[in-house]
Length: 434
Ligand code: GLC
Image (cartoon, rainbow, N blue to C red):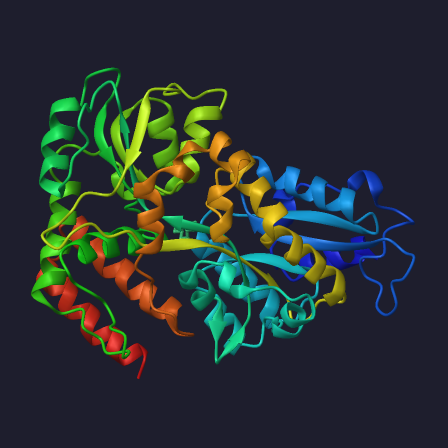
């Protein structure tokens, strides 16, 4: 049955990348006992559900699945690895779900997708499960719960939270920069020392991460793209100042020549291989820089708040949610897995093994989490998590993101002025959300 489904999907060229790249944690247990494609009563049988998520460089997903399978012997998880880039994952899910495929049961969704997936009818509404199992959404960081809501309903469960932070090499940067100007100066000084070839790296490729990075520059100068009332306010002196600083950072000789190809993976590689003195990335890098067998910066790095513009420091809210495909054949089992991953036990595994910041507030006080991941007991980090800036929560988000990506990319490569980029964003975003 499973093979038949895979063949059907492949023929339709759906998820082509993922299917070839997938790793199947349940291959040892499939066969007669596995009933992935069966509908109806699953009592007494082993049910296999497919869980899709982006490539995980921390290695914690396998541990999460093992722990779940141990405590739920009748549910097996087939792990389908998606591309690392948020945008590529998004497009593959849209292809699968718009054709009503039930191949994927549970998937990790970027914080910016729930509204779109809810409106497009791709996702299962979760309130009835949440109520039945008495899950208290108040225990979660409010920003993550909000991002998972649309039309007053809960469509996703917050799984981990991301917030941009600054990583630095302690041997090269004795006092981390407080402002973007200090960052440029310190990165210039440090570049070339201690085996580095760059002073600073960030995510500047034309993809979702570029929106995240641009929002941090814009936010640190007090600018916004869309305000609380859904008004497009991007064309402001503050946004222009923020983007000009971003362009300056990318063009002041402190970044690698190929910065415009940098996503998180490239950033992580450059930092962990000791090629850069400073880097903007998500919290998970604190884990890989410390634990990865090939990391050259173990014990040599620190982390702090992103630099300030003239209105302070801004960190974009990121992270992933767990969602259930509306067309799953196994909603009950899918929910059990979602509940486990996003509950205290699952999130402890993600935090300890994956360095993923929990969305449940109380986990930051858990000794096991604090011991394994010292970042999570840092006061600056808790403060950052409570003051992140969200990307617009709207079913039109992808259109808005595409526009920002194109315009910021042109500004970074100097093929248009920041003023022009901001003006184009205003016109195009207004048209897109009309
Ligand atoms: C991280 C964040 C996600 C963001 C993406 C951008 O995965 O968790 O929210 O959209 O990076 O690259």
